Image (cartoon, rainbow, N blue to C red; front, side, top):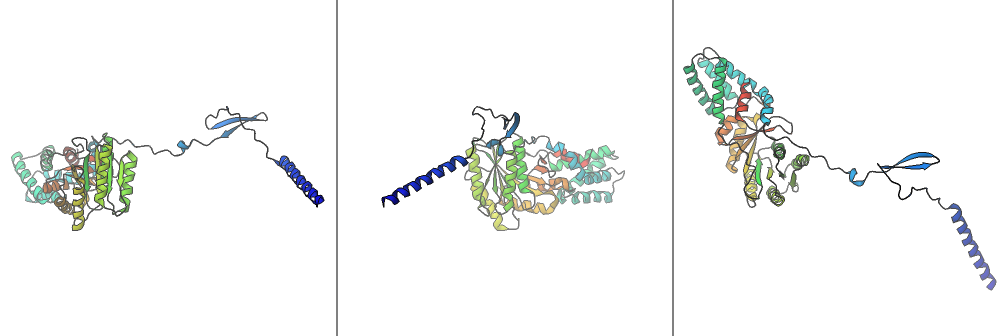
Amino acid sequence: MDGYLVITIVVILAALLAAGGLFFMYRPKARNLPPVDTPLVGGGAEEEEGGGTTTATLPPPAEELVRPPELEVPPPSAGRMVRLRARLARSQSTLGRGLLELLSRDRLDDEAWDEIEETLITADVGVGPTRAMVEELRTRVKVLGSRTPAEARGLLREQLLAQINPELDRTLHTSAPGDRPAVLLVVGVNGTGKTTTTGKLARSLIGDGKTVVLGAADTFRAAAADQLQTWGDRVGATVVRGPEAGDPASVAFDAVARGIADKVDVVIVDTAGRLHTKTGLMDELGKVKRVIEKRAQVDEVLLVLDATTGQNGMRQAQVFAEVVNITGIALTKLDGTAKGGIVISVQRELGVPVKLVGLGEGPDDLAPFDPEVFVDALLGE
C-alpha cells in the first residue's frame, strides 16, 4: 500500500514539472513598447526597428469623433425685400406693365377704363378697392388731360400706395415688457407654408440678434415637428415638441414655459393646419391660444396665406379672424403669382396689415413687407 502511494506522488510531481517546462517553452514574447515618456504627437509615434523608422497611427480623441454641426449665421431682416425686389418684379411685371400701357393711351374711353378695372380685379385687388382706384384715376386724368408715361406711372403708383396704406403699423411684436418672452402664434390652413414660415421667421429673428424657442404644436402631421426641429438645429433655436397626435395646447404651454425659464426673447408656436370649414379644429385653435395665455400674453397672431390662392385665401382669412384675434398677415409665394393685389384686398377686408412676405424657396426669402418697394416692383423701373 505504501509503495502505491509513493508511485502516485512521483507521477504527480513529474506531471507538474512537465507542465511547467511547456509553459516556459511556449510563453508569449514581450513586445518592444516605447518608453513611457515617448511623446505621441499628431496622432502618431515613431519607433526605431533595425535602424528603420515607422509611424504608428493612433485613433483621434473621442471628442473629435462626434462634432456638433456648425450653426448658421443668418443675415439680418433689414433690407431683405429690397434685395429680393427683382424676383418680385419678374412675377408682377404683367400687371404693372398692362396698367401702365392702358393709362398711357392718348384717349381713355369707357372701354379702356373697363380694361383697367378688369386687370385690377384679375390681380385679386378686389371689387371695392378696384372701383375706388378707377374712380380716382378717372378724376385725375380729366384734370391732367394729356399724360406722359412718367405721369401715368406716378398716378398709378400714388393710387396703389393709397390702397395698400403705408401708414399701417407693420411692426412685428417681438419684444415684450418685463422679463417674459414675446409670444407669436402662427396659424393657417394646410399647404400655405405655415411651418416653413415659422422656421424662416425664427431664422430671421436670430439674424437680428434675438434668442428663440420654437413650439411644435402641429402634432397631427408627423413630419411637422421634424421639419421644425431641422430649422431650429440649423440656427440654434430650442424646439419643444410632444408625442405624435398629442395635445397641441399642452405643447404650446410647455414651449412658453421653456421660453420663460430660459429667458429667451421670443417664443414662436406653430399650430396644426386647419381647414377653415372644420368647426372642431377651429375651436381647438381657440383653446391653444387660451392655454398659452395662462402663462403669458400672446403678442402676435400671424395668419399665413398662400398668395396664389387668391379669393379663396380671403375666405380662409375671414374665418380665422373670427376664432383668434389676427394681428398680421404673412403672404407666402408672392413671387409665384401675378395676383399681388391680394395684399390690398386682404388688408381691406380684415383691417390687418401684411407684415411678412415669402419671395422664394430659400431660407432667407422671408422679408418684412415694404409697401413702396412692393409697388415699385409692381410697376417696374
